[in-house]
Amino acid sequence: MKIDTIVPGISDPNAKMRATMLSQSLMPNRTERVNRARGDLAMGMPYILRHGSERTVMIAIETTTRERFNALERGLGAPELVISSKRARSVLTAAVTANLSEGPVRIRPPASADFDWYQRLADPRHDHVSGPAGPLHVLRTGDDTLQNAGLGLVKSAELIPAFALFPLGTELLDLNDVPLTQLDASEALAELAGRPALSAVAAASFPLEAHDVSRLHVFRDADGQREHYAIVIGQPDPNRPVLARLHSACFTGDVLGSLKCDCGPQLRAALSRMGEEGAGVLIYLNQEGRGIGLANKMRVYDLQSHGRDTVEANHQLGFEDDERDFRLAATMLKQIGITDIRLLTNNPGKVDTLAGNGIRVVERVPLQVGRTAHNRSYLSVKALKSGHLL
Ligand SMILES: Nc1nc2c(ncn2[C@@H]2O[C@H](COP(=O)(O)OP(=O)(O)OP(=O)(O)O)[C@@H](O)[C@H]2O)c(=O)[nH]1
Ligand SMILES: [Zn+2]
Image (cartoon, rainbow, N blue to C red; front, side, top):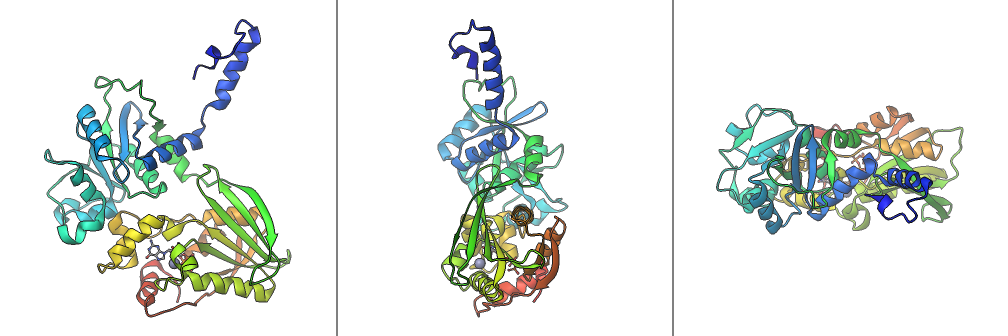
């Protein structure tokens, strides 16, 4: 951005310096650059992902249009398709996935591949009718910083974890006239792994069914993408550990009363126990579907209707078992001045993460409510595969 060209009175000796300072302060920082790229992916816009001298144009398979994809292919040549190793093991033949390590899997498309081919490998909705794909050429060599960053970005945009990378050789095309976002892959990886920063935005008190004194604090993450809530019930005694619940958003369970999980009853039971004790804190994290978002949760529910369990379905779509970041809860508790808690949970992972991030969990209080014939196998898979305590 050339601010000096629009600042009047450029002959003023201070104007140039003011323009430089203004340019510097308007320059997007790392969080903003990563968030722009994430926004582009969500809109189906391509952006430039760089690593060293390598430059690629990245586009998410879920959101791009066929027309845009074809235009990129005509201009830049065939891309590589990147999916996660979890997805690769579900959709590719065993011969192709033998010895695959965790992380991104790079696939060179066959000459006949059209946009439908990319969609079919990305989206598992037709897996049960089409069977495994292969033989295919999996690229195993080289540094995969670009692919790792891409995978982190599509997942954090809550999109199907699959994208295309079109190599952008310097000699090929000059895209300088197209205002594409540019992002460095190492910088993206550092941002995604960093401790999530949250700021307190607003708070107000109002009565709840559980207790007539409650205060809701709204926190917003640094990229402005998501809000999380802390609800303080009654007036917790600062000298005693507070009864606490760390709850992850479940629109289907919390709001609609779905019988497929135990979230709604857990939410209400936690609030009413806090009401009975006269004090407590509920941390409500907007990490729907164990961090994959509601659209992806519906995709994994659909896979579950074809016989997959909750963990297998996440893998088939390309996600890990659990994509949540419980460090957010530790940050929020500390910001509202609560460091000692009794945590209502059956999930030892929550206890460990809070304890490792400055919260003293003096007791784990089991929360076993809402078991139905519909969620019996879901809950036993969580116990068997995810270490939840029954
Ligand atoms: N991906 C996926 N998410 C699910 C499924 N069923 C429920 N969820 C999500 O799982 C999360 C459950 O959250 P919590 O109840 O806070 O956590 P938990 O890990 O079960 O631990 P505790 O309830 O504290 O014992 C919510 O985000 C739900 O939306 C499923 O089949 N697949
Ligand atoms: Zn639920």
